[in-house]
Length: 364
Image (cartoon, rainbow, N blue to C red; front, side, top):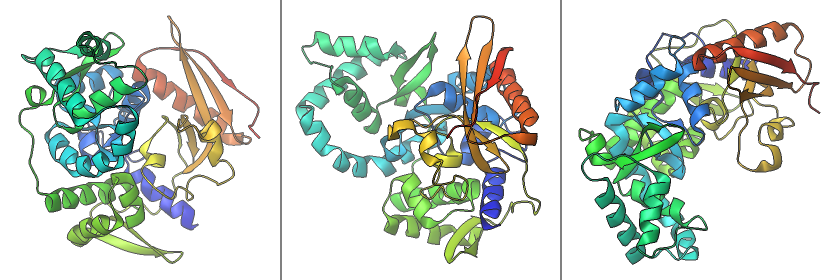
């Protein structure tokens, strides 16, 4: 019953259930930051939480500079609100610079080389230009700086954490890169304490029930800083003791008393899983490896029934539509029809018909 309570609260506060019909930019603002290293999965994470929106609506919000895609928390790509991107970078950058120093040395990326790369990139993008990653890396190569062996990725990553670049709108199937200062000139500035306070409030409002350990992991900050952030906003929250642990959630939008029996097709890397250090309330330990096959860090899209992750799913784009394959961990039973309806919601979001939907035998 305690797991059901936690799952129910998270579904509701994360806007997966009980939708308030938010716009894409409102979803991202309420969530604070949404993990986004897989673009098509990440836009569905937004669409799932704004049921009236289509893929085109999410991409319009990106093109209109209301949602920003960049590297932020934990050194990972996230969608973040445009007005919040700078203070989030300032909160994350110093700790990440220390954590990645050894890797930069291994790649031969010293301060002088990185400074040269930053100058090349900034000069190329000045004046509102939008360039594909490959074009920028080619310009760096032409200056005699090798970009292979993951060096190019880390050059761009470093540039982003210096507050110089972010991703712009799509160019076909490629993400463009733009200068952050030109793309979103009006960003809020917060002190470190102010940033901790703002991030803590967004986190527990959108992800409660959650612990301070969950918050520290998600934000990529120390437990000490996480506690400071929580203490600064606990008058906006309420706590519950669950199995000896202290869980927090917003006091302004408590979850409904009824258990959520809904069925949802979540994207890979969704905040329902990646938003917490401890995922055991919604994911059985024995099935947890099945959503990250080979423990390779790639989280598969998930099927959620009654708050619990009960399988994975895969979509394949075709010229005339989409094919969907369902991989349940056990028998779906009465939930099978609801899974099909959830698949139809995804197809509606990407504005393509379902060509075929199939269910594999339960995974073991």
